[in-house]
Image (cartoon, rainbow, N blue to C red):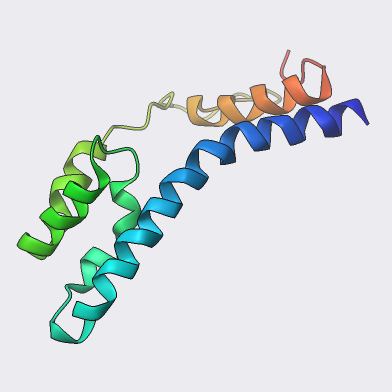
Length: 118
């Protein structure tokens, strides 16, 4: 039961700040709806979530409306995913991991209170 409550708190901590951002996106889409038939660029609707985390989401969305592309927001989000490259296959019985997976393992470990990966 404690693990469930701990995990529920982690989910709440993750979702709560995003709820405000999605409410703002909803307002932006509501305001843009009257212009929908007049040529609202499809990338601005499909990729509107790219404006989350931008310093000014309204400016981000309006920039897309002006340019017809969300390239300005996508360029700021392009970050390499750190991984641990392997050049040879692992030996028999040897386990390997990648860096991106480690974050998930650590969240699960924190939730269940056990070290799962040694």
